[in-house]
Length: 193
Image (cartoon, rainbow, N blue to C red; front, side, top):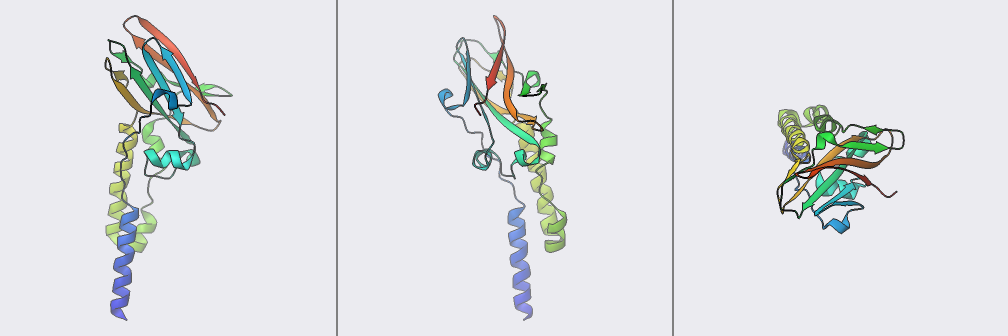
């Protein structure tokens, strides 16, 4: 009987440890015409998609969907077919809603909303499971910050990343400023609903 109890405890720790891991996923880049929101500025094509379903969310992040916790993640992709580098600074982005345009949410705050719980796992699995949750949470925080749109896109290059928005009101679009050597252009990407 004692062996059975030990086996069950070891199995529980293994399962809990597996649930507390985090696997960073590479941001998926599609061709420009596959994005529901698109715009062009000269030789620069911009696409955007809101991760508004669990399937879309799980392709990019190994967490519960943030849209269930008050945030949207907008994947922005810039295809720069020009012969000069361009800047699309995520700090200049504005999340558009029916009520107002709002500044993007802090990626660290969005990550906090989807962290793994350590309390229940500590009680059930002991220090091993709690330590695993803590490690997974650090990886989640890092992944959300690292996946912010990088801002600079080299000549002939492609860049992809995220802008996070609070979704107290549904996000209907995102506005971006594209900075080139010949000037700045404001671009509104509207999501079909």
